[in-house]
Length: 377
Image (cartoon, rainbow, N blue to C red; front, side, top):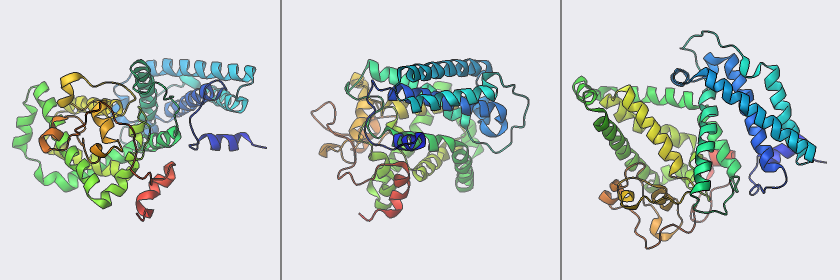
């Protein structure tokens, strides 16, 4: 007889899409919201260790409390409904128990006192807000402008990508610290006051265009190297192994690739000395495009698609189709691929199939973490 723990372990493994009508979809939503609320109450209790210093200065705690309150209401309501209707009761009971535990720990009313800013931290708040914001915004967009309308939200292998999302967000503090140290150590010699002064005097729109262009030039050649250098492809193949494109697909990325790429992209940003406002705007653009360009949306943007990267442009990059192999490297400006001769040329609007040719990358988060070091192909 299967225990709730055994069932939860099976649910966390990739074994096909979740089908509606049995309480599994609503149960997963309820459990996810309940866990996010539990993590939120922990962040309220230990903000100096569990929240991101740069982020916590920019949001309203009262708004966060309101979001947590309604998340607990929705999670508890879905759980009670499934328990009463006899639908996946083990899952509903787990979600409801987590909501109760959150309430016992103070829920959304936990007071937050003054605390130090220079403590080591795990970015729980970044993980919670990004997951809620990304899922609400991009699932809505995907349903409104769906490319593949028969693709469910909880499609096959969503668990693997969700595991990548969790790990890559939870270690954001470590990644930022490590990349900053590497950038200062490796590229500190290149930072010149004259260049920095010139860049900081640029009008905001010009500086924003420049930071995106500089970052994308580095991204383009780094990305191209991941495809053309066999040792680097071992890492990047993990990202390309995703077979269904949606808002969560871009999260599938080996942690070493994340560290290398961020270090190289941050290097020119540090050297040029862009202002905080420009960097903040760039981060918003990067965050949006990274999710949107993987999304299951039918967007091409007419002639603009030759200038900026769109979902159509990046979907081709993930295709197994012959004309798409090692093409469309840019992350922001599509004209870079046209300039360097690596843009896809096809009579079809959209690719037919995604993933790695040969499908040799194993499914499952930990298998993919080990894959670059164990692959003998």
